[in-house]
Amino acid sequence: MIKIIFSDMDGTLLDEHGNVPAGFDELAEELEKRGVMFAPASGRQYYSLEDSFMKYKDRFLFLAENGTVVMYKGEKIFTCPMDKQLAQQVLKTAEALPDVYGVFCGTKNGYVLTHQYTDEFLEELDKYYTHSEPIPSFIDVPDIPVKVSFYDPTGRAAETIYPVMKTFESRLQVVLASDYWVDLMNPGINKGVAVREVQKRFGIRPDECAAFGDYMNDAEMMESVYYSFAMGNAYPEIKKLARFETATNEEHGVLLGIRRLMKEGLM
Image (cartoon, rainbow, N blue to C red; front, side):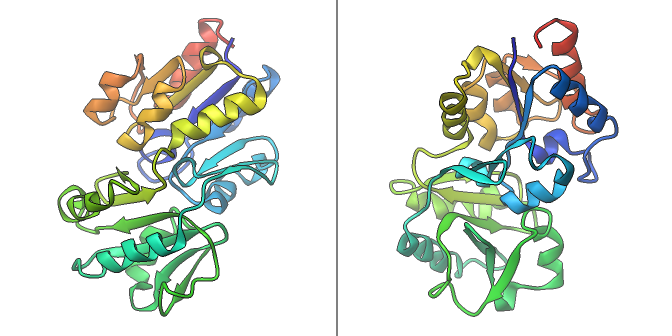
């Protein structure tokens, strides 16, 4: 029987407007009655996830920053900080890239250079970082980095950012998180590692877990559970990797997938 459901947010649980789909609250109540935990698993900041699910903040388990931070009932149960000097070096390298925005993702805040802290960028940043602040330099950030992220507003991150950041691949994990974002984290850390930490912490087997995802930063999470679902709008490689497929995020595919599991008596 399934005991926990991990779900990516953007392009997966959230609809095309970035909202939690209608019917989610009713489903969340049903999951709680059945003793099934729900776990948003995202590249977003923990505070952003908490804000999205404020009424569930003491019930859901949160995998934030692509698995580098795991929180449950306000307690940090897993984290994997980066070397600060290396994070600063990566951010310095990106300064040569035209029209690319960098974010120092700390345990307390997201930090952006003052000249890039514009209304245009904040419109995008606020989707993932509800706690952020401008800083004059990345040298003296009063925080510990867990991830470094870069944004290309043209949606060509695979061409503009990813090849440059691949030069750090021997020391860091470089992930194409979407058409717009590239993330760098400690090697060997990803949503899958976080899922396995959760499984160990709560004594849950992979065949007691389900996961929903759409992009490459969901790959290891899919491999860490038995009931892996690719969204109808998922990246082709994710569809190949997943055991099952559901509808698109616009069609509320996560809710449909969970209902399918309930109907099949798996929770």
